[in-house]
Amino acid sequence: MANTPEELVEFTKNINECLDEAFETKLQNMRSAFRKELRKIKSSRPGGSGEESVHRSTLWYFDLLVFTKDQEVPTPSISNISPITPSSEKVRTLFFCCHIKY
Image (tube, rainbow, N blue to C red):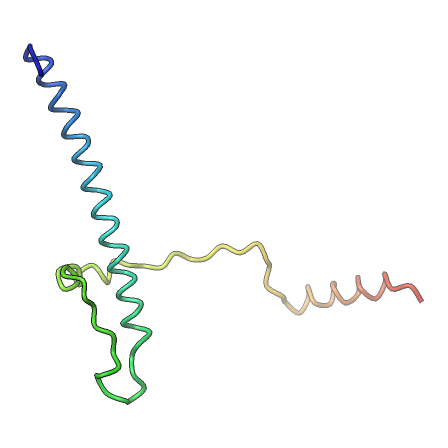
């Protein structure tokens, strides 16, 4: 237990930091689960077969987080494979033809 006001302040800071970290972790987990459910709903859209085949979320907080769905912006993917362009295809063909042993 804290014996002095300084120790009490230090003890309170430690509790608040732990609570802040726990809250941030919980919020990230909830948003992650929300995104997963949103993907399920989008992928289950029927092709004219009706509403019965559309996935319905069972998350108790799904409707509370719907306002965040517009904030979910996919990040552009990074690829180390360059796209094939006509000029790079010509270079590749030329390189391949020059290294074939007859």
